[in-house]
Length: 272
DNA sequence: CCCGGAACCTGAAGGC
DNA sequence: TGCCTTCAGGTTCCGG
Image (cartoon, rainbow, N blue to C red; front, side, top):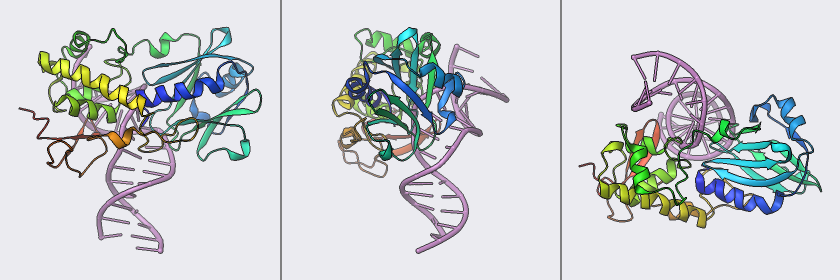
């Protein structure tokens, strides 16, 4: 599923293909992909705008257009963006196409139709409530402590909240907790100073590694050129149901936390 | 505010 | 083999 490393990879690989290009039009195969404004207004508003720049914030991809407009894309669970030059080779499950000048197309694929595009002027309306970017320098163990303060919910559940920290999803939450040797059900506010330090370091480490490997292709995620990412091969616990812990060899555990499948090693991540 | 569960969707995987 | 059920999990909404 697209989390911070996957969206960062999409941004990095999309940028040289689309920045500076003008949008000649949009095809909506499924109008539900447009969150706001109405599909018709969206089509009119995007047409003939130029893509000036590309940013990521949390799991949001932000296309800066001229006139002060932002085209915001969220891939949700099964979305991916691919770029191609031949409409006859439109990928399966393409729900929307952004046509660029010169015959290039951005295909928004999404089997489950959860992804969303929005055209807005005010970035804060979309990303204003997001928590800190975990890979920026201002994300410190002290900030992590402050973000978890007062939260008695399971740590894993709190890590998935985008207004606490932006960009972490189910896979990288499991990986970060394993690397930090902390049980996912540990009460979020109850971490010791050492656990906070380990978790802070682990979050950054697993996200950086995910970006280096160009994201994890466990389900539908593909890079803009159609290639898979490689991060799933390096996962220690995520998506490794019924397998053994790569560290101690004991069977991994699988439980549901807030309805999310959670993989961990009960031996290396004791609840105590 | 905090917390947990349901809903949105549909292809893939598992069970019988 | 084929039908049926369950699972996947990012975000938003809702009830307690």
